[in-house]
Image (cartoon, rainbow, N blue to C red):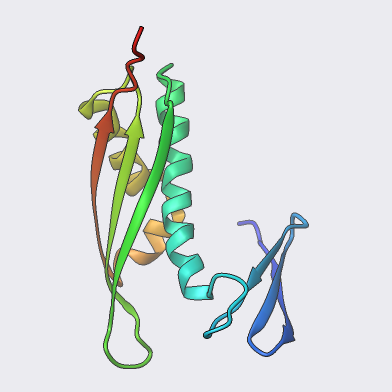
Length: 141
């Protein structure tokens, strides 16, 4: 088993600065005048980012090209504190002339069932579902 470490420093007000073992810095903030994403927003981005990296790896290993790729995340928050996320929906958006629905479904399934550590940690606590869109980037000649 390996150990991963991180550190978060208080800067001022609600501003925080996270430091990773790899030397990266992530700013966090909350409130009306926030200068960065909140920790809860970063959780949603972490889920999307982790799964996206898996999908990119799986699709490129199949020698398929992606022109553009993004994930929209929508979360339903509980009404009362601690206002946990009750449902999270990920919409995977691909622009590619080489992908088909089956390749995308396979990549997402492998991410969810085998590779995405964020999904693995969250899926027993929150309802996480997904959909995807595929558009072609046919160029006009």
